[in-house]
Length: 174
Image 1: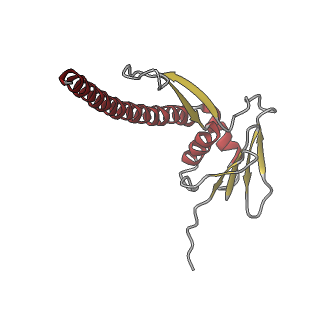
Image 2 (image 1 turned 60 degrees about the vertical axis):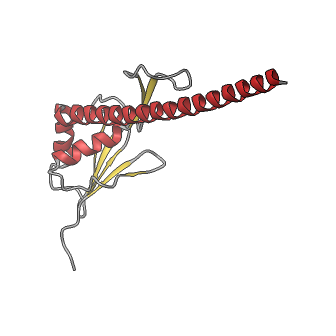
Image 3 (image 1 turned 60 degrees about the horizontal axis):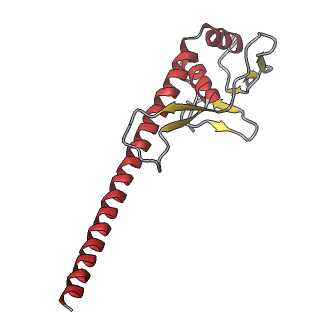
């Protein structure tokens, strides 16, 4: 009878230790996932900034801005995958066609995979980070910067057809 109680106590102790161990593993897994998410956001911003810098310093972007703003400041700039259209209040729109100028198509978004630098991941979390970056938005931001930041960069209207629109910031009040 005494050995049954001792075996029962040992089994209860093993069960409690296992439960505590599982809770510790679960909390460490949560912290690993949080580290992964923080690393993801950091890499996401870094890749977007790198793409923005590429477009901002590109002579082609400067050529596009000179082409679409030759006469006046456009009130709207539309960035498509195959062209950039600038609209004016009292003048016809100007289109910079990528095909005519031998410029490659600009995707609305693309996925980039990067190996994770964090080696603490368990088998439940994949050690590769898949970034989703938006080249058209970064090109639109670079165009806005070259147009003296007079266009609204806080709100980009990415429509279902993939057009990114920049609107001129209003300066006149009633």
